[in-house]
Length: 382
Image (cartoon, rainbow, N blue to C red):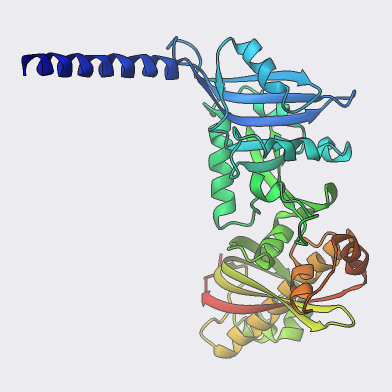
């Protein structure tokens, strides 16, 4: 029994020592949080990593960014290790920033190769850095302690229910040869001094950027893709529009009203795509929105049901025009980023429609937009 107790105490002591040794090893590892890819003039890569510094020396800055030049995306890992002098952990990467020139140089396939590496998770967020990835990751910010963590939180906030689309490594790496699906939409980010802003979205066809969508346009695209989206809106109504909708009769304090501005927030939206004619490739895209009126530049009689009906009529007309402009744009640049092809194919049993066929067919289609309005709350004069 005494020998057994001695053995147990020794075993516990060894376990404690082993745990301490493992902790020391972890402390010597730096964690990569964000990774950026730029294309050099000689078609090589400039890869920039933002990582949390090893804690072996507490006085060191906890955040650091390093750039290396390499011919392949995989070659950057070895170069990073040589530059920093200790091991880097890639399993916690949250954001991947891509230079637009990456697509111009037809090197997007290098990023797809990363998805096959077990070090990189499927849920890494992908964003296009309009001025280059290094411009964002290497800048020294006064109010941002860690740029990688900041970008991750920023994307989480803007893609959760706001207008910005979501693009992950999993979605980016899908192989179109396996199936037919909607084109990619990737958020665009740029730095303006100390501020970083998501300015819009890039519209892709295969692996090429063929167009861009503003924040407002991205809202409609995201809604039609079936994702929850909110959007702060401001519209201006001309006197002619007020007359045509009937709103002109509901400004009791100003009979000579000219232009009116209206601020509101779309607090909920849901998009639907319907095939109206299979043979003629005719579609109807509908977005249902719930609106919270936040302010109007002229006193409006919200107590009158006729005034509410006139306002809804004008809002529906204006927002439907905006949606139609988005549909016309994606058709013009030939980027089916909302999934008309998916809906079309679902209506044809045993369809053998291929991506190459749809690229030829999509510009010949007819896309009609419609927005349905539901007023949740009405506001007051600004």
